[in-house]
Figure 1 (cartoon, rainbow, N blue to C red):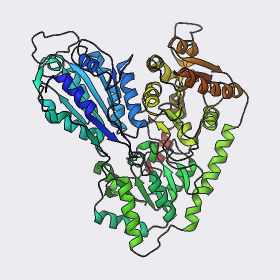
Figure 2: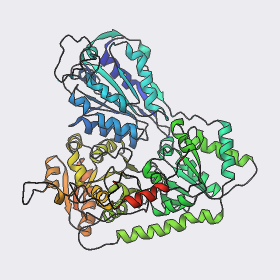
Figure 3: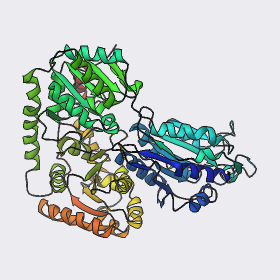
Figure 4: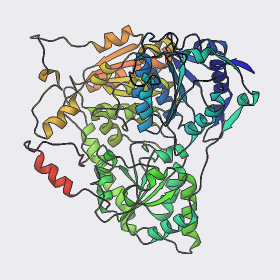
Length: 615
């Protein structure tokens, strides 16, 4: 088939299909997010126009925002579908580097196709080209190398034949999933070559379930049998494997209390008697209490990030770690007994091995019942935080109302600031399909709105609600108009607390002086500085808007926003003034660098002495 490089790439994208966890066949690449410029408008832009009925193209308004929307789409589909983002060369390309970092940190697939400078170098230096005096082959797109799982610069059309299978491998692999960058020089995009027709034959990418080594399963089973207080930790890998039901059945069979990581949140029904809550700094005191008493931790599908482990102080010093993970890189961390394989398959094999021994191994009964007892106390604490009070609402109260009014199939999101602690620690899930996306791998301010656009495309069975602070809104809000224009509804709850409140808490809680976080502590030449009218701004971006000043108004406004978003097929933005210094605390430590002369130094040193280390 005689095609341009761009036509060949688009034809290949269209030919790729994916099988969802429940067995449905869907396009692997259901959407392209594009901002065209001189680096991609004629080559890739023309090819996409020619096939526009087969692969939807959505116009973004910031390159970072549209690429973050693609990340949100991948998370909402449990990594079974992948968004594509294309930009021009230069600043347009570099704007997508942050989104690549988000995808990389969170192990989410993303295909980035930035334009690149001319391979021929005939017109050099071209507009937006950064020249490197020592290396003419280097361009700004090399910045993607450190935040890509796979990077290639296509300098000849026929290189696609070798690289595209690798692109598909990375985007669909449980262990390697992450961002792929294909840099496309604009002259190569338009170059014509002969491609084999087989390259464009339909392919269905199915979830691969590699099984763990039998010896590792046997070792894990023996280690479990030796424990009396085991704890099951469920991470994002359980979500992407579709292993939630298997994990709960495993816990029930063996009486193991269950906790969740941020990425694994909403896998377990909140009312389950073995559920102890979410783990870590932004989690629940109930889960952290059990983690500190467990003699064994079976961690499934998690990289045990510092917020999950309270910077490795949440577990007992003598705890035994058993890690089930598709990625060996994660399975061997902290000297764990590594079980490398798919979460669902490994749990099935581990259960079968335990059963085959003829021993009905279970955790101690008192330990099994500790989960519900400790979580009941945490629930009572959350209820007290959610109880109505006068004045401006707290984050906990706002989250409580959103939780109460949401339907079981709805989807809730956040990314940065104080809201991750409120959603992760306080949300009560009905179970079933995962219904939460808390981007706390990269904690990217602005993901809340852009990611919601992508999630709304994918999550059509329920309503997406995204929650963010005023700082995140100001960081990146352009994709509100993208979603409004495109006709993708979701609700955005903007909690205005007058600054970067959670960083102010970190600053002042360690003995630092209030500085440059709340607006009251920032430099200005005005006696009375201006304030942002978020509702008017969102209206100007095409959204339907609501405001609230107290809990009663918020409850009514959120109910109306849910109806309006669906009825008008566009985002509904609800702005509510919230208290700047009321938080849900899980009682866990997080390591940050504390100068010796600040009051937080002594507590920092004490916590460091409790930090779990593997030597």
